[in-house]
Image (tube, rainbow, N blue to C red; front, side):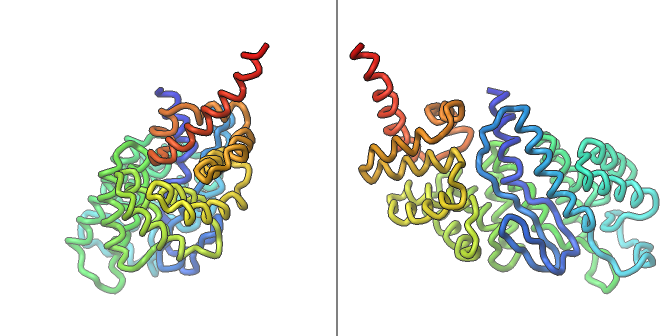
Length: 360
């Protein structure tokens, strides 16, 4: 079970962690999404890949390396000049200086090269030398997430959030004075992490707070809030948030649309869910989870033959996951109605496979 959980965390890691981006005035385009503003986040949504552990490690590292390389040039808040760094309002640091700055930049450079373990060691040094530097902790958390150290990452993000709040409470908004304005991003990171670390209630609290602090509709936050509500069994509310997030990204199909389709299935809105799923299937036709979901919808429509055919398109080894109720419930967290619907398909396939043996 521990191996499966680790495997799941690596597969879904990039789908739930929003890595901090700062100074991104033009926004960052990734996987069809574009976030604009003074600060931004990267949320890389992926479907379950169902590859072997060794392949997973390579794929996850390469995927993460490509993400952090794009972030390397913008890893901490922009300040106008070096002189401003001399302005000290309290013990909390928003911008690194001296040796801390050198170590921090070295860590960023290693991240951009995909050397996450080495980058982590530099960030650990940063947090020891300057334990009140906000983004030393947040960047350390990012590397811990990339390496699957989710409990440690949660603690690092929590420290960054506490420092950010301390800075906000003790620092006046003055021109040229470094101030933490990224609490909602830090909460988004921690909330997204908690979604995948079996603490959905805590995740929902973080994400709802991030949503309030953001102050305007944000597709990245909304899809994470929707996911948190889904995992907490709040399907109607999740449906509303998914729908709003989709309306903000309607020009580009995103993998989280699959979750929205399944929530609609859970609510009995199968026609609307099927329409969404068809668009997801058109973009990700070979994803095993998409094929399994598509088979479930086809079976619900009474098209059992087509449902079985679609299900059998999943490669044999990966298809074994979808007969495992624990995998469906605890690993990829399908809604109950979807699990029940897929069971009808898998039982029919098993029965059809056993029939020739019975006649011989």
